[in-house]
Amino acid sequence: MHLQSWSLLATTLAYLTAGTSAAGLAFNGANAPSQVLLLDDSWEKTADGSITTKKGELIVMGNITEYFLTWASSALATTSYGFTMDGHGINPFRDTGSITGTANVNGATWDSLQTGIRETQGDHQLKVWVANPAGVAFTAFNMSSEGDTVFPSIYGRQATAVPSDALTIDSGSPFISFSPEGWKQISDCAFCDQRTLANSSTIGSWVQFTISGKSNPAFWVYGVKAERHSLANLRVTGYKGGSMAYDSMQDVVVGGFDNGEGSEGLVYQARLASHERLNEADYYTINMTLNKGALGIDFIRTTTEFITPNAAATTATPIGSPSSQNERISILPILLPTLLGVGLVALLVTGWCVWGSRFSAAAKKRREQAHVGTNGMVQVRHSTSSSTVASSPLDEKQKLPEERSNV
Image (cartoon, rainbow, N blue to C red; front, side, top):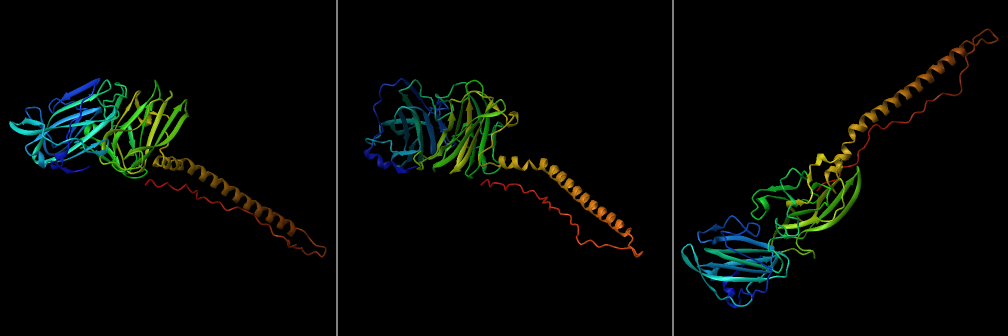
């Protein structure tokens, strides 16, 4: 994020002529929709509807084409600031930097300036950072869209691209399973839904959930896109009639940009992964395994319903996760009695053969001793061959496959 002195605004302006728009939204700090304007904890609301801070961040997100932000300070020329649009650093002052008017903030008259930003039609997230010991206020926000709404779609919980009745679960829901290691549960993320976030930078850490496969199943995973380029493997496995009916894997970008470069700022409540055209099945298990960088899970939505892991008859094996190790280790209680039984039978058979051989040799010796020679002496005939009982050594140590490292 770029920090610049307000003195650089001498040659720039924040105004763009608004075009014809199908939708618009105007608000101030007092009546701002929570799904469009997000504030960190540094901001205070005033009686006149402004929001003020000495150092803080805010986010405006939605299906927006034009942004007009009016802000003020008693010392605009010394205010530091930074703007990012969808993680890209931008300079929103494109013409001149002259002050456009005044604003009343807490009974004081401050110089004000309007920042105008125009983007292509679509989902965007504008993040603003400001700092001034004398204080900075935002007094008005005006948004417009070429679409039929300005409310968020990709960026935000109230998504225009997601059915309004889609279910939502937070990152702390019992319907979501996480790998045992690598995850940190955050409860004070100002720009996250419900202020919670599950975050990991441990390669191989995974997150998994299961949804019903009935009635046009679909899902959307939302989270925080890290500044550094990050990748996760998305695996979607469907089951029908007790058998696997669908299985797909792909890498998804969960940080930075698709071209492999890092961003200049975090992107919050961003859609990390989704699938909107799944065939009907009994249920689907969705797994995301971190391959590079960092992974932050905020909330998940579905058009059907979420299923607890133990409610499903079978679960998909997470890629690179300890569950596959657990499956191998869990075989030991079944194999151990079998191995012991086989070993015992082998020992009994070997003992029986040895005993039978010795019994046969003794009987033969007695018959030889009972043979009387022609000279009236008992002749003892010594066998020129010896009987040997062959046995194969039994290796009772059954080696289990080595556990895969879940780094």
